[in-house]
Each structure stands twice: as C-alpha cells, then as structure tokens.
Image (cartoon, rainbow, N blue to C red; front, side, top):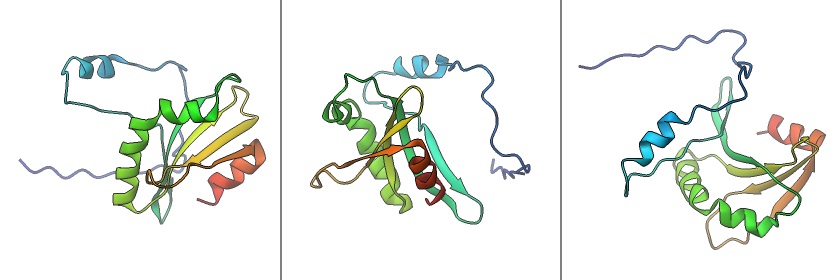
Length: 134
C-alpha cells in the first residue's frame, strides 16, 4: 500500500524541551538486533525555510580534561556516517563539543580522512552567528 504523508508546519516550529530526559528504549531495543545492524541518532539537523536541510551536527558536552584529539577518536564512527549523509545531501557536517554553560564551542567540520582535522573554538556569540549563516 502506497501512503502519502503531508506535513503542515505551524509558525512556531521549534518545540520546547519539556523533560530534559531522553527515552532510550528504542536504542536499547535496537542493540538487541546485534551485528551488523548499526544505527545512530542525529543530534541536530539544521533546516532553513526555502532551503531545506543546510547542515547536520553531532553535539556533546566537553569536560575540561578531554583533549580535542580524544574527542575525534570518540566520534570516529559517527563522523563516518555523517560524512556519508552530508556528501549525499551536498551539505556540511559538524561535530560540536561545548562547555556545560555554553560559553565555549569547539567546532570540527567533518571531512574525508585525508584532510587534517581543524577545530574552531568559538564563544557563544560567534557560534550563534555561525549557526545563523549556515
């Protein structure tokens, strides 16, 4: 059976976080499927009216003792998946670590493995502008 799905967007598209808790039931269930059935959730899909998807972002909180190279190692698999998606959509992909208080953002554009990873460190205002210009 072929189904057509229609979306209607309200003026206020950004919904407030109400619980600050994540429901992990689906993720836990999916892990029971075993290998080779992998999945990841996309943290952020940046979307703009009239343009559609403009970027994908994997985000996480950085603790002060984590080295940036360590952070790349922690996200290697996610970066591989993100790069594949971004390449097919012809959009950029980023890994963003931030301080708990959102005062500092560490932004890495996900590129192919031959390119040396370069982190951009941004204050909140600079990161806000970065998001606005995507």
